[in-house]
Length: 293
Image (cartoon, rainbow, N blue to C red):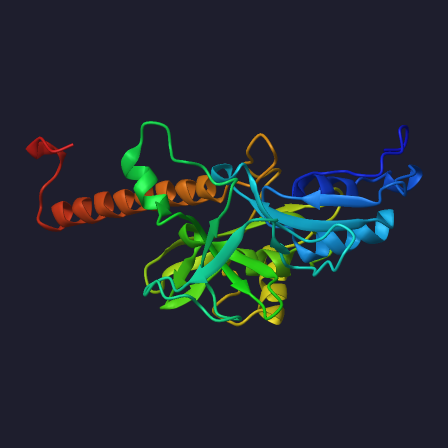
């Protein structure tokens, strides 16, 4: 950017986070940037706002998926950019939101699954008719993302249906937690996920990468979450990491974090079972002399 002075820069949130937090960014001239489009993952409001302040340009969020070649929505690059939304459908593209359980079309302001239809939507998965039938129904592509549409036709992604955390009967969307924690001055990157909880079913855990040279404790992150979120949405656990798992384009892989947590939980359960069995054997007078390991 400093050398060639480009005006347009499409990227993913991880790139904008990196530029925002580069220790020498103010030594370089990045004010040539006029318009940027972010995709591949949800763009935290804090990241969007800071990047625009830094460059003086506009950073807008779009949305798409591989099954739609891949763009379906975007905020107008030089029109009305509503921060926190994915904008409006692309030309010749229809979009609607249906209730997650009933399938009835939702009214503006009501969350549900986002469906899209248009010339960019795939004809199907190659040689996978069953998968195709699940995703494509009556010409509509079921995205698997929970979204909300406002009265003016701007859409906001709430989160992936599969990533939803259910804690004590409450539905919690990780992105809402992440958007809040990104506002903490020590947080560089964060991912929220549901981890097994004996009492609540699941509880919220935040995986945090701190900014270089900055210190924070788990208690501080948890307190910050409780200050800005409803009690049931605030993270109960925090794990600090040097980095988070990502795809090749920089999208944070929550599913890998969830898989790690489930594996840990299974090991703990196995260890508890072994301890219980050993205790039973000791109490009954059995020992290794009986041939049991």
